[in-house]
Structure formats: structure tokens, C-alpha cells
Image (cartoon, rainbow, N blue to C red):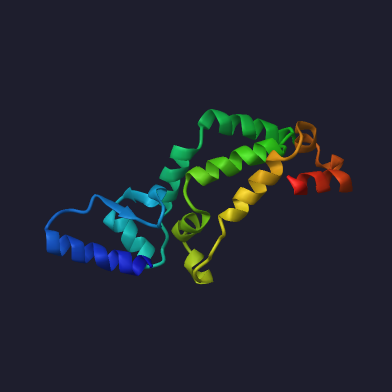
Length: 151
């Protein structure tokens, strides 16, 4: 797909004589991003685009929250509420498949398809748990699991 996007960008530039300001890397509105020719070239050549990944992460993640999370991890107090918050922040960066395409070397594994609906499913499961269950997963016995699955 990206090769077609790169080829189309060259054609659009040639026909219109205008610079390209934005490019879509997917089908969703959130997949529209500022166009950088060097980054597009790197993606086409399978070399990844770490600058775009870093920019997306900077937009999606809050430094203060990251520091709080780091403290929780060091104290081994990371729970499913924290995991859910991280999952939601990752979703702000775009589809997981598009993020993987930007990581250098991932093209070696072919076109990796990640079903983002699975993340929605995980989010629904966690939201169906009580606060205590999110803090201590050892509480999840068979009846609690059935209750969560029914929601």
C-alpha cells in the first residue's frame, strides 16, 4: 500500500505543481498526518519511520502520567487500571498495524495485520471488572470470570 501512496504522491506533485502538505497512512481520519518526503521514502524502502513514531508518542503520552507509572512499576503496583490507561494512550497514536509499519525491520515479517477490535474487546473486559479485581487478578475465580464474560 505505501508504495502506491509514494507513487501517487509523485504523480500528484507533478500534475498539480503544488507541494504535498498531508498524507493518509490508513483509512481513518486519525491516519492523516503531515507529509514528510524523507519519511515516506524510508517507509517505502522498509527502513521504518522512527521520527513519526516518536512524534505520535509525544502527542499521545503525558509526561507526568508516565512518571507516575514508572513509580508504580518500580513498586510493583501496576494494575489493570494502569494497563487500561496505557492501552487508551496507545489507541491515540493510531492503529497498531500502522505503528508497527514505522518500526525499522518490521517489514521482514511481511504485512503484519493487527485487529484493533481486539484492543476494544480487552478494554471492555477490563471495564467489566470491579476495582478490587483490577487491583488483584487473583480474585478472578470461575464465577467472577463468568460475570465478566456476560457483560
